[in-house]
Length: 186
Image (cartoon, rainbow, N blue to C red; front, side, top):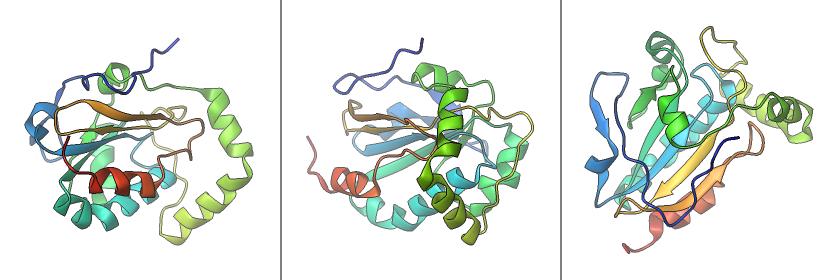
């Protein structure tokens, strides 16, 4: 059983490298808010659509003091070919061994992936992703059964919102992230 993190505790510290080889440490974001997103894999159409949504909101979120770190359970070469092609203005981290996923208690669930595929809203999400140019693509070396998770971390490194997806398509509402970005420092 996976142990989930809870709001109100310090976000687990980590150091990783983004797809360009630049170091990313959670500690370096102290004094700013962070949206830490754990995605499935870099070729996931639904994940790429979500990254596109983040890119669209990023300038405003940046002005409000919110940064984004996006993690994918994919090999680095795949990251560059798929999600890296979007040229996100925030760090994209390849975590093919899932060490950050483990640190944050994200889960792998064949049952939740099957439930996603059976969910009525999934067809609409897949159609939206396809319309944006993101096709459903299998990715060698990735974990098809990974379930996304998102964490909103305050300026002091404390988890304020912890969201573990119930389905592959279950993310924090963008409006909830907007509200967090707008909040005054604690």
